[in-house]
Image (cartoon, rainbow, N blue to C red; front, top):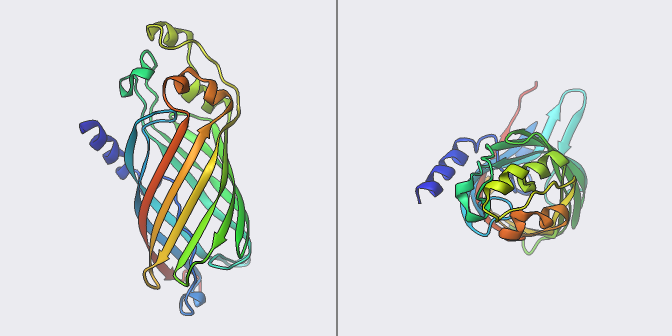
Length: 267
């Protein structure tokens, strides 16, 4: 219990600049449509594996960020929202907590991996009932590799207040990332008491899965969000002794609430 609380406290302290945002863009009101910036900010909680390939779960807080309108003088505006079509961009980020050998018997003999922050950019193309996107993030601190995701969603609108999306996902990572979280050095293997064998993974796709998201407009400013996902480790990630001792099936479930801010900066 103390371990759960300490991990949650650390994640909460970094939630202003980390986590995986899942807010979706809703309709912009006539009043907000005249503003230069329309941004949804909020907070949520998500249950996900304690570490990649773990068979136990923890609940982490995370931020929700969605940009509905963004204006720069001389460049014009980027507008997103329900039933909007065109190109979109968004900040991509993720936080990975510290991993220690004491977290699981499956990690016996492994070295401690410090927390990591991943920062990057995502973008894609959206139609009224679909969107395709890709994102790339750079690791800081715990790992210095690159990770990314490809996705395709179908989008439906059960009512004026609801937006629901669902579709496949594919995650990939550089060799540095794979070696950090799925590799096993010869010394770690020797210290594991026979639980692990030396292993050196290569860059490539590490998981495939599906994700579903639903957002409900409580009013013009407040939105409620629900997200669920399933990922299956593949390739060198699935062949890792770390995964063989844990679980290759990874589930997540999150909820959150966001508030819309509309304002002008440039005159």
